[in-house]
Length: 338
Image 1 (cartoon, one colour):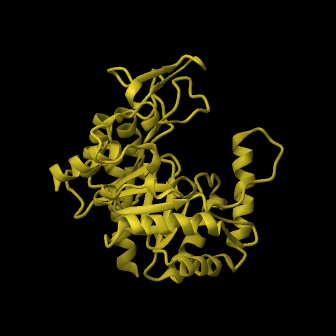
Image 2: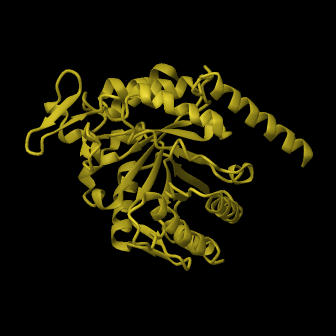
Image 3: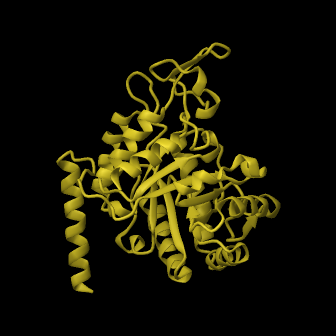
């Protein structure tokens, strides 16, 4: 036990040093294999024609989103019709490929009248903490995974802000990790809020770092430069790079940071040569991650020794066989490097 703690300590120190040196996670040592993980919104793939077989020659992992939740008592609720149809379509298109499929389960929202974001997140944490303490959430999740024959569970609990909230989340991750056995545990987190404990990291298989919804001085959404700068926080977190998937947006936000999310495949044919589109109806300009930008980010992730990339989300793109496809550009970079 003492030796393990010493190893963990020096691993964390090296990660911290890499962050202070401004390396942004660059190790120039590729992971043995490279994941391409995509979120698939269950309601958006009810028609099998929204899925494309060739895409799963590139995609290695699927996170099914929007079909399952849990409440503060540890009960798990599933939209059986949506999830069953999505799985049926996915499994038909995937065929005999070995694609890892996990279920994202969203937790309860908070109860507060406050308009302060931090208060809202604290209220959300209070409800999550009740669920984690219920003693039944782990078994209820396992029952759902058994029913749908899924490979693991994934949590988008992005903002446990206080140390108390993080302590309870970390203990829960250890608890469910022990019970899941060979099944996987994944979490999605913001780069500024990576407080997974050393013990929790023993049971967390992948960490999707959401390096998007970040803007540069010109209002451009999720540029390569801002991604690299914010990725330095990963080096400070102590999370092993091979567990990290770098988040890639297949959508855009307006330069004024407004609450609009435009899918890439809906606007690719009207972008100017610099990746901009102005919607005259609402008077807002959007800058998109185009195939060359996604290729740059994927190359950064591979050369940085990260375990993979994560896509939000699948149906925002063209089929990978289309020359304008973002997924296709990821595949090309992987072929060049592997």
